[in-house]
Image (tube, helix red, strand yellow):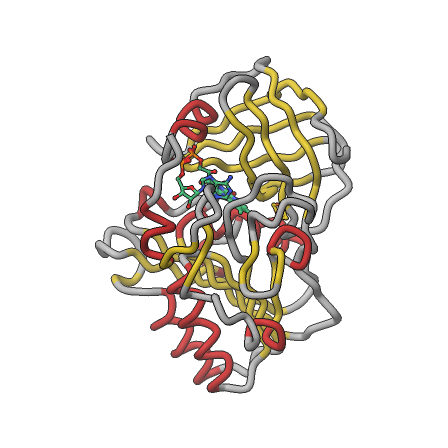
Amino acid sequence: MEKKPVMLRIDEVQRHNESYATLFFKHELQFIPGQFVMLWLPEIDEKPYTVSSHSKERFGVTVEAKGRFSTQAVALSPGDLVGVRGPFGNGFSFDAHANVCFVAGGCGIAPLAPMIESVPCGKTIIQGARSGDHLLFKERFAASDVLYTTDDGSFGQKGFVTEVLADAMAKNMFDMVYTCGPEVMMKKVFDLCEANSVRCQISLERYMRCGFGVCGACVCGKERVCVDGPVFESQRIRTLDDFNKKALLKSGKEVTLTDYFSWRSA
Ligand SMILES: Cc1cc2nc3c(=O)[nH]c(=O)nc-3n(C[C@H](O)[C@H](O)[C@H](O)COP(=O)(O)OP(=O)(O)OC[C@H]3O[C@@H](n4cnc5c(N)ncnc54)[C@H](O)[C@@H]3O)c2cc1C
Ligand code: FES
């Protein structure tokens, strides 16, 4: 698949709760964990989604219903047609580490899940969400391998993934920490990694239009998140001036992250 959309039929829809669903497509996708695809719903819009599930013959994307596009996407059924472009972006890198840690907040488990399933080394998984019902993919990992946190204490430890990471770092020397979730959470993860001299990879989100580096919609500092990212490693995060600070709206206007993530396009 490439820069033009290919129309694919939905093979299966897995509904996780009232706001999340995973759409599966029977298609052989050449892919690196952390890469994303552009989904196109004709006459509605086209939006970026990370590949959350991958096997030789099919792949899945997990959609959180937020606004016009995603609400329509989670309501789709097997047999419905969706335009798909990609995969785009760099993806996570892995080089023979012995001991790694994954830190996911909310839907941030989506890009990490295929990575967790593919790395052949010691791993600690820390996954948080607002409630037990919002913890995705519990069935994909052995319960004993995951340290869960929830904001309301309904599952796992009540509190934040960063508190659990601080404890885990006191007991383990990680070679790499991989993280995805709200940017304020990833900033705390990055700061903990810097304080403990541990390398880190984060997966960033910015407004995307083309997905392959030509429109400039997704810039963060000097980087285009769609091609230079969405995954950034410690060395580049240190120079990302707008990390956890600013983002561009669809109009190109620069706003604070709070305004960016509360903005709705329709
Ligand atoms: C690389 C990447 C991977 C992503 N992976 C996932 C995923 O796996 N699952 C998931 O639920 N969401 C993912 N998102 C976010 C997803 O693209 C937005 O939630 C979606 O576009 C919302 O569209 P909407 O019309 O429903 O909501 P809107 O009302 O249009 O917007 C809701 C919020 O979504 C974000 N958003 C809207 N349009 C875009 C756009 N064109 N590009 C980027 N962000 C946008 C903004 O933060 C906005 O505040 C990803 C975003 C990026 C950049
Ligand atoms: S989305 Fe167009 S340059 Fe990144």
